[in-house]
Image (cartoon, rainbow, N blue to C red; front, side, top):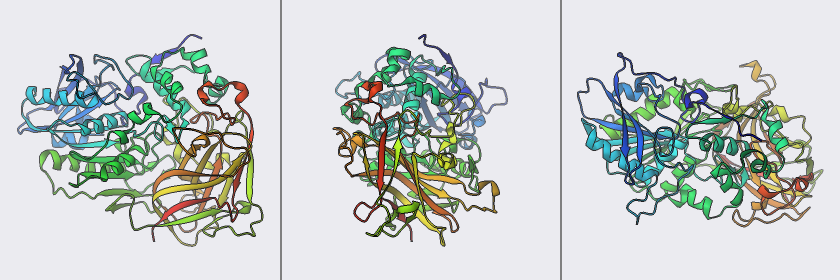
Length: 613
């Protein structure tokens, strides 16, 4: 089949940097002068760089740097970029750079470049390219104050934290926002070993088929149908991309958590904070919610100089960079959370570390608590003054803080999971991730009632709450389950159910809002490096990290848990018959299986909640 694609600018599909821009030329009324440079790296490769300096500059200013694979040539003057306008009004020298191999920069692109061998003076990585760029800027851009800061969202957040691990002496503060941290355990490409099919394919195609962003042409508006007709994953190369995507080829030969993934992960690179680092995470980030929290936790262990901070807000991927942040999808927050972040947190952060403005008093943890819709400050993340309380599954769809007794009416609930009829991860149609009309950006806030009538989704819920229940910290599922197959996926969702008659906003009556959720591939229950088949019909315990939340289940609401075994096509279909490498599975390997989720005195499935008293 012929490979079809279209090229689109970042600003046409607008996603990764979290803000919308249109191509603009610098105009006479712009506050910044623009210049372009091709800056030479230590190995001779030249990187395309756009530099904006304030007109009529009267003081020496620091650099603010963003390095990206998404193309910088069309960036308008900084005061016209909502993401950085507050800082632009204050005055910085802004530097935007295409990373090597992308858009107008020379060199070869690598999706997630490994760290270099420092014994080789000409070896390069994203840290060395940042170092060489800063070195050039200090020598060639006049009226700088000798300091640099760096920021960015998603991939740009990753280039930011990589630069901070091996920084130029002039790099004083960075704000990594929505960085991926471990592409096998969480974030873009896998969750707990389960492959993020639609995102991984569409992103790899967009970045690797050419030097500029390109969308695959599915021929189906509802990509659910296209991915289902794809059949086994082996058909992707066989029928469609024919080995043309280096990253996809790597996915197929690294199905387990081996050295390839471990070397790529941040935890193999992070040791201690060498400069001031601000991590930024969104509660409903559909791409990289976990990364900033993992990075913060890893660096916090050796933060002897109090240089490691985190901000957590009610945002989608990059949602803090544009708009006012008063709502997300159907959910309202009653506060301009994004505006507050840009003006009161981001701008003040860089003003202190790069310009000595302000008092330098920043809370260790700044979190927007959903449900109560209030900003909160904590001295640690997760906070230490919370109590773990289990909320248990029971017969007849009941959920409560009481543990099941021997009198439980039935020890388990069951459903048939059929790979031929997978549960969609959001209401259909499922548009191409970054295609026209896509609802990808807010799907984590979607009303989960769209799966209520499916026989392959189990539901438990509490009685109406008589008082608020506040959770602040990590949420863990302990699932006791069995399958008639020899492999299985387990999707667990913690949900806030609005009152059936919600007078404050009638259209939200009965709304089912996911607060914490994730998927776990059963073969990895003992080891992500060495998977094992599941013994059919044997009860196993699956410990599933649903990640962090800071949320108040309000009085009058209910707490709900849903469990299912497919989440398609964001997660590939598990054949449910164990095969060593799912990328090599055959059509005949995909088989229906009966799944049992237990809630007995012996096998008490539950969710561990970090309850704040």
